[in-house]
Length: 399
Length: 206
Image (cartoon, rainbow over all chains, first blue to last red; front, side, top):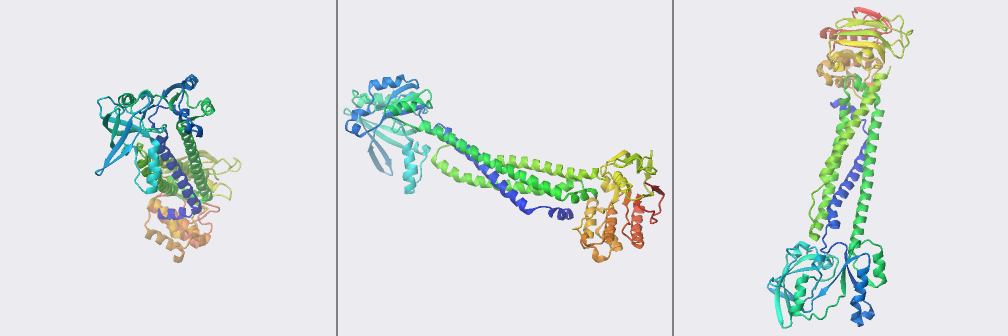
């Protein structure tokens, strides 16, 4: 088939083929990266890393110059609590309980022991969504589970570790670290083993089980003082537009993370859809471009194909060269696009694995690439054959 | 093999145009393998059309054509060989390559056989020149050699000697006759005026 190849090779238009290769490569690479990263990053936005119930926010009073002088201003009184509970968008209100005794944390590392003063708060257990086997305490237990703010970890990972070139720490790694907590008061003292069992994005406090704090306040502290500076408010619907108006009007702070994360998820999804649509348009244009180019080749070389058919070549034999060329180019192009997408993915997954404990999802890149290649090859092979049959069929109607 | 035509007429010709033809609109015309037929007609009387109908690349006719005793699927490579009036050569390929292009389909002749046939009809230096640089008569000889590079039951020649002098035409006809004889094939030749290069069994007016 050397002679046939020699004839048909001259019919190809290199600039058009180069244009097709470039546009298809860009389009497929973008689609693969966009779909794969959407799949990889979605758990970050939807996964419930926060231990608090959904639709729950922390409410506190604004700290002003006046309140720093008179600390009473930061506590909620009964009237305010009653008013809040009456609001139609409020489902439930719970108090934070503070520890009324001395607390100290100690960690031993390489023979050295580091100690620091410490504090606890607690919220009713139903506001937490931690594994029940972990979040448990009774008076005989020597293990005290803790929940710390997610911001602490972020502050370390993105601030301190980044600037000091220290290794970053994941939530999983953090939960492996054990330390000692010493509580004392009323002339008593007790030592507990402790571990961080969860991270909260909604509350800037160190939480222990409510049962423990109720017991410990009686055991080690002064229970007469029971006031709330912070409340946990559960909404019927967090997107209710009356919520911001109510809280702003009364000078109350509300933790925004619940509202913010749903906004971020929405824009992320919107951005991804936009990118995928643009990339699909690039692919469709490149496919339309090469189909037009192939039609042009067939039109321009009509006499060549008719003569080949006349001297005995079948439509399949005439089409074969173009089918092979376009199939090989398309496969190579898609493989390169998939390799680029895989390389890009390896860069961001390395970072993600260290920073977040997300489940590593399988790669969709090669599956999508294979499906795209099969669809395009079937399309091209069918169209080329059809185009040549149509051109050669004209012969039969000629005089 | 036998080619049988029944009541055929090109759709683009009127009945009056084909009146008096020995082939068109005749109830039955038979071409038998092993026999040689000459079909004569003036320009525009449907000589090429007739061969195209028989070869199967033009279906614009009324009536029926039967290729009796053969399978239709390898018609253009193993049953009928056709030397076209417009030659259907590939100008960018050399004379040798044009013949090889056909021979690759059938593997019927060796390269040395092809070279030998071309050498007997063309100056040697022309063999490896692109066909675009050859004269019309030289191209006609290349097309003639190409037509012999396949197994055949019939050889169809459409005004094969229109650009050749008598001496060259004789040489071409001799090579063709040898191949027809060897393969036991039939021959249908169209011409404007009667020609004498083949031992015809029958002469027909179109």
